[in-house]
Every structure is written in structure tokens, then in C-alpha cells.
Image (cartoon, rainbow, N blue to C red; front, side, top):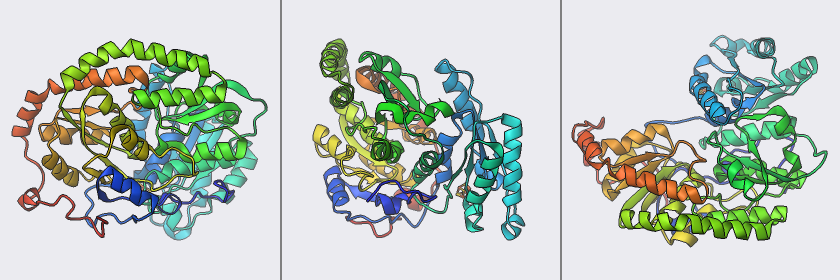
Length: 489
Ligand code: SF4
């Protein structure tokens, strides 16, 4: 069956990838149960916090250069826009690009609009966005409110597209539709695939598509060693860049959770091969990744030379770091595949992987040959105990950390950093998802672990003066998974 179809919406992850939101056990068991699809998407019957697919869609749509976004939603759904604005400016400046400003308007759906419809508000928001920002494309983001009243986004998009003469792209990322927030990435990519991407006019044999989050420009110097050019997608890509991603030699992504859907469709529909090995985190995965890219671009012998040189460059410092870090236990808390990426660096530094929590877990992938990063991690690091799947929920992660007592915690999401500090655990924030790629990335993470361990006394002091915001009943509870419903053991 074809991965891409012309329907307006992409299938949600619960149905497409059989994703799960709750699990506790070990890595082998999770991998085997995933292959047998023996886990369902039961969550927990108490949730301390949540997120929304619209939020994941925004991380893509807000950062397309020359685009505007109309959020067809109550104004509160756009609460994150200022964060994106700050991030977009910072990263575009760091990458030496023109300062990126998020161009967004909320249609401000209100109560009476849910009775009489809000199509007029949407139309006028689109024209206002056109007047204010002069964009080359406009994304319309759906919301719970627009979904519940059944707003006809396609008709409004078609009408306004005819009048304005550029693509108007509905993105069906209603928060209620999927409990797996990453469905929002797929929704944004599906809109782009349907209405923006064009057939290749020519092939660019030295161009590599890299799907990433907003992060440092580390791929350009890295792939320059193979005389390759990088097409950074999608944050901070222009509309022209997006139109021609079908011309690249291959597609890689730094996190399977982010971009396997669009990568699989680019291969299926336009013959752009997807790099089907894990992202370049850790020495062994970086070797494999470079070899795979070299295979698609006919640079195999150059890749072997680069691999040899890079190993020789980093090994002396790695040896020193291993001696310093030996015996320390690390716990990783991140999104699904990105947690596996970070975890794969741990063994290179001689550390023990004490456990890992991912925010969800996709039981399988969009195309059968895509990388299974959990299986690859088991192959490189052995079985891992204390593996859980939990969509943030600090009250639960707190109990897990209190049980495992790691020496170090590494988190991908800023709002979870304080959790480790409050428990007296030195904590690293991996906010820049590109920072730890490649051979240098392993060394840099080792240095950061070494520095973080030196904060031990400080964070223990903070923990001693911290009052956790939970009842005595919960703090004395033995079972961190008390609120999980119907979990398979
Ligand atoms: S789309 Fe729904 S879940 Fe998302 S922020 Fe708006 S109301 Fe909340």
C-alpha cells in the first residue's frame, strides 16, 4: 500500500505507526513487543501536563522563510508564538541568515463562531496575513475548535489560493485528534507534500536533505568533508528550497520521530533515497551514517578516509574522558528516537546507561526498511534496563529517578531540566539537537558530562532546600506506575 495518498489528512500515529504512550520494562522486551504490535496506546488515568499536535506542527510551519501562518483557533492556542519568535531569531542569526521573524495571525475563534462558523474570520485572517507579510505561501493551522465545528479549510484554501496566486496549505493538526503529539510533524509535512513540493527539474548529486530541528549549523562543515552540500529542512528553509527538495541525492534526518514520514514519501514518490540507518550520534552510528550517504553519492573511498582521520583525531581525548567518567550512571529523558541517539553516545564515553524514558514509542515505521533505532541501540549497547515510555508527567519521572538514582540526567526539553536539579542530580539540557552529532559531538558531550558532574554539590544543596509540589501520599508511593491504565508487563 502506498505511504502517501492525496487525502487531505495523514493518518494519525496511533493508527499508522501503532504508537504507545505507556510502557515500563527493558529495551529487549519493548523491541520484541513492538515487532509483535503487542502494546496498545493506553496512557495513564492521571495526567499532570500535556502538549498538542498543533505545537509540533508549529515547529515546522512557523520557521519556513517567506511563509505566514494563520492559526484557525482561539487565540490561546498560539501561546507558544513568542518562544518560536525568539528561537527563530537566535538560530537564524547564529547560522548567518537574515533574521527570521515568525509571521503569524490567529483567526481568534470565539464561542459564537463555534455556532455560526468562522470561515469568514479565516478568510479575512488570510488576506490580512497577505497584506502584512507579503508571503510566498500561507499555512492554515487547524485546532480543536475548527475541527469540532467541521470548518471547511479546503474550500477556503482553494478560493484564496486562486485569488492570491500562491499556495495556501491547510495543516490538519487538531489537538484532540491524536494523543501522540508528533502527529503534528506528519500533518505539517503532509500539507507541504500535497501543495508545495514540485517534481525535480534536475538532479543535484552533491545535495543532501537534512531534516532537523532548529539547531547549530554543524552539518555543513561535517558533510563538506565529503564535498557535499546540505539542504537544511525545514526550520529556516525558504519556499524555493522546499519546492526543490526532490532534486537532492538523498534524505537524512536527525530524528526518526521528526521526519520518517516525509523522507519515506520523498523516496516513494520522487525517488530521493532515504538514509535508513540511525542518525550520526555516537562513533559507530556516525561511521554507518557517513558510509550510507557516501553510497548514495558515490564517495565511498573518501568516506573511509574521513572516518579514519576523524577516529584518529578524537580517540586521545575520548580515552581521557572515559577515565574521568568511568562508572557513572546516566539516565536519558527525551522524545522517542532522539533518546536513542543520545543514549548511543553514552557507551562511547565509558558510562553506564542506567535507563531511558521516551515521550512515546512508535511500534513500527512508515516504510519497512526504515531504521529501528531502538534495535540499533540494543545492538550497540546491549539490553537496557529501566526503559519507560511516558509523555513527560514529571510526577512519574520523579519517582523513577528517585528509584534509579543516576549520577547524571540528560533531557531534551527545557521544562524538565529543573526536575533533576530539584532531586540533586546534575542535569544536562540538550536543547540544540544538532550539537552532539558526529565524532566531535561525542567528545563535546563527554566534556559537558565532566563539567556537569562538578555541579554535584550545588544541585545537592538546591535539592536539600527544595519542597516538591506533591502530597505525602504520592511521595511515599512505592510504584511510579500507579496511574498507568492497562499496561502490559
Ligand atoms: S489545538 Fe486544542 S489541544 Fe491544541 S492548544 Fe488548541 S485547544 Fe489546546
